[in-house]
Image 1 (cartoon, rainbow, N blue to C red):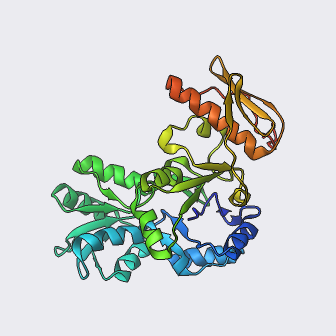
Image 2: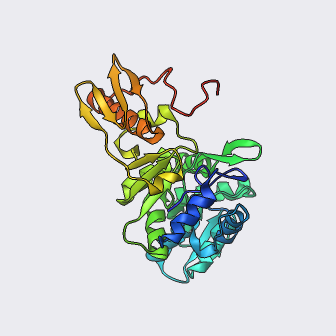
Image 3: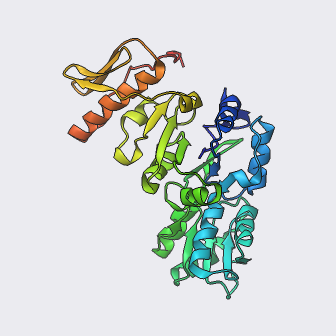
Length: 321
C-alpha cells in the first residue's frame, strides 16, 4: 500500500527510481495499491497522474479516504441512504459508487453528513454543516490533514475545517483517512493480499495508520520525515522498517544489536552520550538509519525525552543543504 506524495512523486515529478522499483514489485506478483487521504480527486484522476509519471495505474488500484468514508457510511446506513456532502467531486463519486445518495448540505432527508477537502466549498455550506453537526447529525470526515501541498506552497487542508466545525459543535467526527483504520481496511478489502505493508513518508499518517490497523510499515526518507522526526518518534509513530528509498522493498532489514558501547549494525555504531546522539563507523546508508533509530528510541523510552541530533549529518547528505 503506497502513499503518493513523498513516496512515488513529489509535486509533478516522480521520485528518482520510483517507476523502476514499482515495476519490480509488480513483476514479483505482489498486489499493489495507491492509498491517499486526498478526498477531492477521483481515483481515475490519481491513476492518470501516476501513469503520466511512468507508473501505470488504473482507477481500481487507487483507494481514497473518500471511498473509506463511503464504506463507513454504507455499513451504518445501507444502500440508498441520503448523505449530505461537504466537499468535492471525489467525495460525491465515492458515495454513488457504493449505492449511497449524495445530497446538498441543507437537504432535510440526510441521515448523516460527510466532509472532505473541497476548494470550492462555500462558507454558508460550512456554517450549515456545523449547525447540523451541533444539532446531532452524525458526521464522518474523510481525513484530518491540517496541511495540503499546492503549487503555491503549503496550504490549509481539510483538517483545518474539521477543527473549526469540531470546536463550534463540540463533536469529533468519525475519521476515515490515515492514521485511522478505515482507509487501510478498505484498501485490503478492495485489493486483497495476506501480508499487507504500508509504505509511506509521514510518521503521523502513514506509519501511525499501520500501527492502528495492525499492519507492518516501511518508512522511506524521500518525503517529509528527516533525522529529527524519526529520532523523536514515540512508539505509535515508529515504522517496522526504514530505508532511504523504495529500494528498501527488496533488501533484508537486519536488526541492530545492543552492546555496552551502543547499537551496532553493518559497520556503524550509534550511542547517546549526555543526551546527544553520536554515530561512528562506515557502511550502508540504510544501516546508519537503523542504528540511529534504535539508539534514539531506546533513549526516549528510558528518559521520555527526545535525543539531541544537532550537528549529526546522515551519510549521502550534502552538509551545505
